[in-house]
Length: 198
Length: 208
Image (cartoon, rainbow over all chains, first blue to last red; front, top):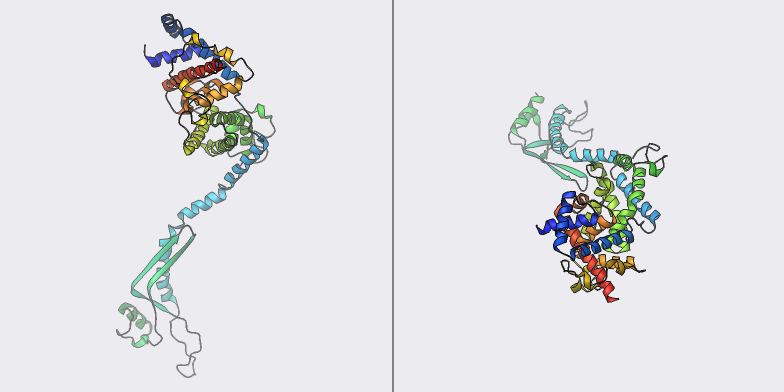
């Protein structure tokens, strides 16, 4: 018989869990070795003593404090996972998906806003001397040939920044009515602006 | 957290509520039900941890860790195993993690100086006719202390197997689940642990 099998039989014999078939096998083994039964009886006795002497349940010292400490940790755990925060976390996880959309919207709105805004001309009051400024002059930008947007998102800092490169301020001295290719404006833009003055 | 008054732990006596009901409430994040579950099982967990590591302060902290892990893992508990088996499995993991961190999981390091290891080799052949009967050896006022010393001398796996079987009363399959090993390994560990304990306790008697 294999060693592992005899060990299993002896363990079951000590615990009184042998099947009838296994009992026959153990009886056979006991007959082969006169000291074996005594040895197993001693092991059984020790097992019984361990069961009797070592308590299965011992309340931890200061068990009320044990519970209060534990429940405080549980409360913290609950608070860290409140539904509103879970929703917030989900929203945060999708937040960066909007960054490129935002950048695109910024560029598009730049063009759109530029088209629908009042002509970036200096308004001259009728009857007044030409060239006299009567309003604050807004700085107007146009998109250069190399317009591009860059999105920098920092999840740790919970901030994002969108940089638009390729914008240039339109110089005040450009006369769109007579704009020429000598200006720094893109040709298509200059032509478009010129049409507005036709 | 469940609304006040809906907790199974509220109103009914703690003993009237089954573990199953408490677990279901805990899975709905009912902290009150969890506290009842803790009160019911903390003694077993603490006794197990304390018997494994023989350090009261660390046993207290590790028992806290066990229950916090239980709280976090309860939503995933599917009741395929008994709750107590699952609880002992978590306890096993926490204790072994702690032992690994302190690098004391090798045999005998917990109480090296207590007994002469040359006398207690796991597979040592015993000769009952030359030593006192263990039940005689244990028949003294320091029986529990002697057993504790002998248990501390066992290696971690043997000690845990003995504690789960003789003290906590788990069956062989449950022990295998808790310890993450085969049934054959459990049988082997149980056999050699008992044999070693017998040798230790009988040798103690011989020295007296």
